[in-house]
Amino acid sequence: MPPAAPSPAVAAGRPLRGRDATRPRSRRRRARLTARATILCTLVIGVLALSIAPARLYFEQTAEVARLERQAAALERANRALGARADELRDDAFLERLARQCLGMVKPGEVAFVVVPKEGAPAPPPEC
Image (tube, helix red, strand yellow):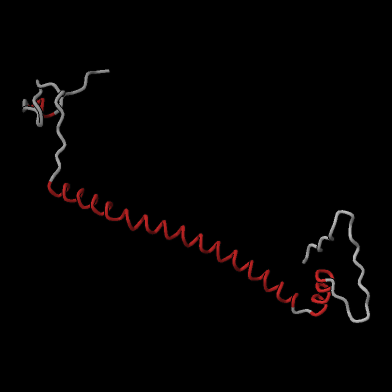
């Protein structure tokens, strides 16, 4: 492979631009912040700092809304269950059954018998 041809600047005898050909490349160019870049960085940091509180508030409120929605769903389920129980208690046949089982009530002319276990007083049925 033949050696590479020198650049036109070297061939013309002009000095190299940007750095001295004899000086080593050990010294690096230092990055400078211009006034525009400094102002931009300050504005970005300021906006970020000012957006922390609203972002935190947003996430807290989102969690609170989710908690309240879960609570509302639980209350709606309980409300439906209580509505069903209220409908049962409006039924005359159901009320008569409860009166007979839980309170030991009888109709006029009927005779009530209560079986007492050896351990003591009878336990009421679980629905009472």
